[in-house]
Length: 57
Ligand SMILES: [Zn+2]
Image (cartoon, rainbow, N blue to C red):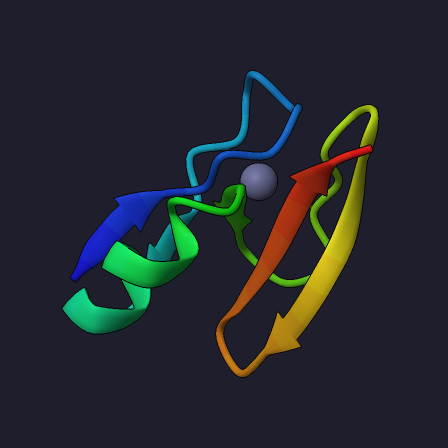
């Protein structure tokens, strides 16, 4: 499913494609962004093909 990148760049409108199961599991843990996008005060906990998962530090 497509969702808008949740990085800290308010101008970012990149679409991240994740499957529904990934979304359900990962979304509980943190923010999903496009690869190499940054979340302020967050740390990357997973670099996957097509998305990165960030967790509040
Ligand atoms: Zn972004």
